[in-house]
Image (cartoon, rainbow, N blue to C red; front, top):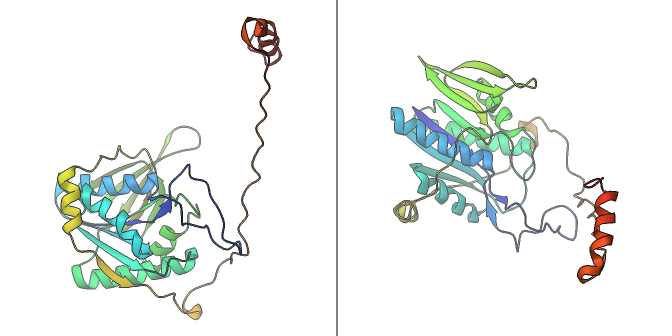
Length: 261
């Protein structure tokens, strides 16, 4: 089994988001970075599959030079090769991103053999567009399914299961090679070991300069006009009193909010 995992460098959740002055990008100067929980599960699943059945693994990311940090995290967990499609750090739209990744996959397969399985996160933690994995699959002419929380294999087929709206499960059988978008909960990702991190630092990351595809080579989708931050809710603090004399006011408040009757 030859498996490729595609990950994206995204701001860590919980950080305060600030926009650039022109409203076109997130100001990333003071943010920490990671990959989304869905993609962490994709990396873990690739490692588990190869540990159980043998094969090869690779991880690919499109992003700035600093994205090698996220690639090395994947290497520390047991992924064997890493490819960085290096950009100038600007945000790419899903159409251009998918076109660049699909072109890179074709080049990788020409050099290293075809990928049996390409894993994406269900959606990125920052943009949440749900598009890139599906667009890559269409560009490569391969079957794709998203939202997967269980994977098994049988005779050249990947059996993928996802939760149904009624609480049950939907099961899909895709002939390999295939593209699968996985969700958090597929597995419990391991923590990288110290020896794993040391090995990852020594590994060479293949760097390819990513070029935005010509406008005529892709079907253009919606274009971003402006980013806006949601209105923050103001917090109001009411001091009910101090010491024992505050007890009646506390009881009245608990009655008002329905905790006491």
